[in-house]
Length: 250
Image (cartoon, rainbow, N blue to C red; front, side):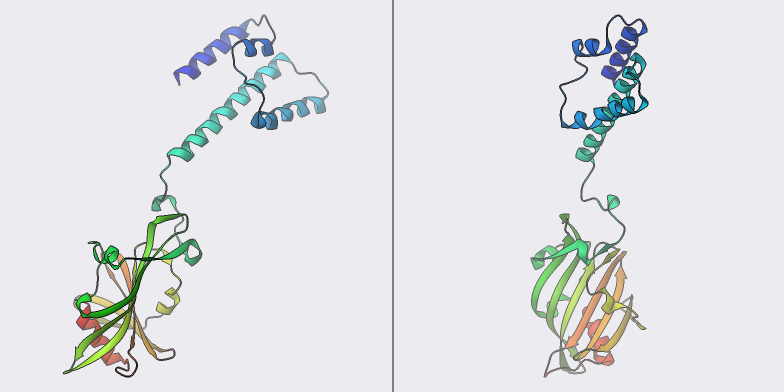
């Protein structure tokens, strides 16, 4: 800023009683660099305006051109600096809603999910196998996680002296307005049940087999659970689904 003030003072002093052409003074003081691609795009605009008006370029017009050019340079510099120093991957600077087209799904280690203390997990001790763990991240910043998923966890729970076997897919939405690919499956959850101080909204629906979908919140994070019975062992119904929720949401 000090350099800008000194430059303005020098300009005002020189042009209060000009003794030489502006171009000569500017060249002597190093105000204008040699024309490059950027300046070539700007200068002809003034030349065209002067020619259209059918008049020569006066000293006042030259000074105006210089001032406008200086403003353009300063604004361009500010824009570059903002582009360099503004934080990237910050949710506060991103659109409010993301869709599946804004994200990419990456396979991840199960430990990345289970080690996070800010995530609520169902009782993993009943899981025999998890097909794979994944995370949905922004295409523009793969460090920004929108969703974690535990895919097709095979587990067994007791049910009246017998055992039920289910496949459970568990989704953890870490960005509240991410409209992930399967979110439509959780629309119109018409039933509710209280499970260990959690309010669970759910529904049962027939796909190729009976599926159950449920959602709930813990500490402002949203969780989505999909379950269906293991072929030949358990046929999912409302009763054994609620039993499943009671056994794994502790």
